[in-house]
Image (cartoon, rainbow, N blue to C red; front, side, top):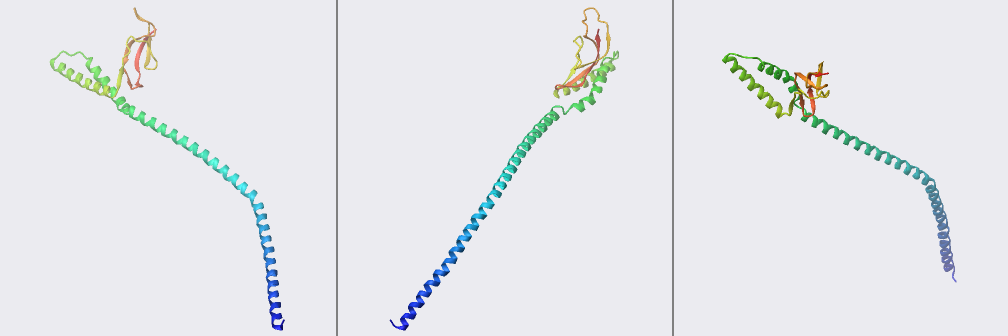
Length: 198
């Protein structure tokens, strides 16, 4: 073998050894990296579990808050609907209360005895006005409480005095109506002022 060939063979052998030497540290480095990553995963795993538990608790809390808010909104909507219904149902209460005195005065005017033809015509006009008021009240579902000879009911009547019962009168019965009462739908806007038999 010539010297030149010998040198080439030595060089090739040196290159192979160098490559092997370089490969070994790389493998060690990879093993070190893998072991470090495994250690890191082991360290992070409990933290991830804690984070998951915290997030799950927050999620449950928010879900509970959403349910409570939905229930509260439903209650508010029901209350508003009921209030709106009552507003519509009793919308004419204030006006009716203001007009009750007018009706009382018209009824008192009709109780007056008249003798002349002019007064009779005037009384007839007052009666027509009163009938118009009554028709307007009926259209708004306002009805009069006129409980003469009926049992006394504190829900609809206001007793201003009591008198001994007469012949054929039962005790606790209305024997005189001093002022009519009025009801709007199922709400008393003015109780009837009455005298009750003892």
